[in-house]
Amino acid sequence: MKKRRSEELRDEIEELIAFGKLPPGKHLDETELAEHFGVSRTPVREALNQLASAGLIEIRPRRGAVVAELGPQQLVEMFEVMAELEGMCGRLAARRLSAEEQQALQAVHERCKAVRDGGDPDLYYQLNDEFHGVIYAGSHNAFLIEQAWNLRRRLRPYRRLQLRVRGRIPNSFDEHEAIVAAIVSGDGELANALLRAHVIVQGQRFADLIATLPLLHATAA
Image (cartoon, rainbow, N blue to C red):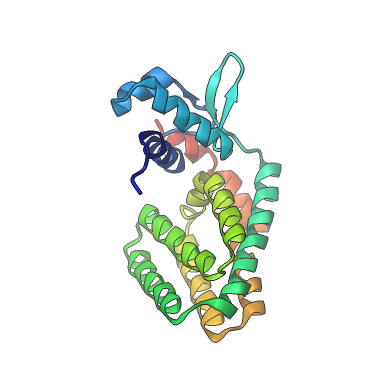
């Protein structure tokens, strides 16, 4: 079904947020966005309301729409929840993944390998989303899939930053390799544990993420 223009705008603005073109704290002017996309202010306003509902922006009195900012404590809490959702998806996928879905998971994993060797963090990030999306779909639990995607979208700018830490892409790929093996072999508990460890942000990984936060602003300059 063809998307409404406001939904297309929502996706386009979300991409700008995810890739650091609209950093946390950035004011979003409806008139400027309408001119940028060549539309009236009405679909822009609708798109911003949709993004606000998803938690990606905040609409503040007298200031209007602003890209949402997350503090360190919020990041830790949200990544904790995301790790649990991912683990649950992996455990269910290990039991429910069809033969075609197993092939799709292995295929996107191979594409991640090619990008890993090329060293493009943004392309790896996009394929990484696809990889996890196959696992979500393989859980065959519509409510879980929706919640996992909602939180994943909310954390997009911060997840992308993680891949810019030195050595993170090869480590991520190696973790994917073990996750694929666990799911394909039907070991749900191992898949759960591996995905939770893959996603959770703590210790050195948390320190690295906090250290890279200024890049969210630098990339928009």
